[in-house]
Length: 147
Image (cartoon, rainbow, N blue to C red; front, top):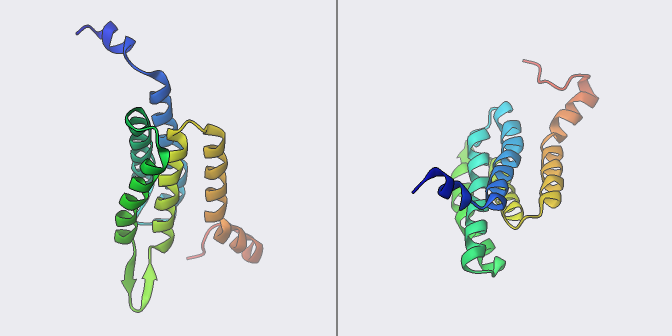
């Protein structure tokens, strides 16, 4: 099989969807990575990409997106549960689990090709995750934690 034949058979729309899902997952993952959370850059990129892969491939096999979404939500529930840890009577990792859940939805949105909605979702999630820094800035005048 020649390289021209391989490249001619590529579906650029599907590839763009996967790259966009990876990039938007990276935006959210970078925020988690900078806050030194267990589920960081790579995890969020892979969750978004994985959801987009299942959506893109699923749509070519079964055009019923609700069934695809159900499978993604079920699968991400196991990852989210693994991110939550009980330490000394406190739960840790709930926000990381929630961001993985949202990023899975983000990958689904990109997978169906709704780029504008995906960008809006990314901005909303990023803004929500920055609430602590905004609050800290209003109280101390700095975005960064004092050590």
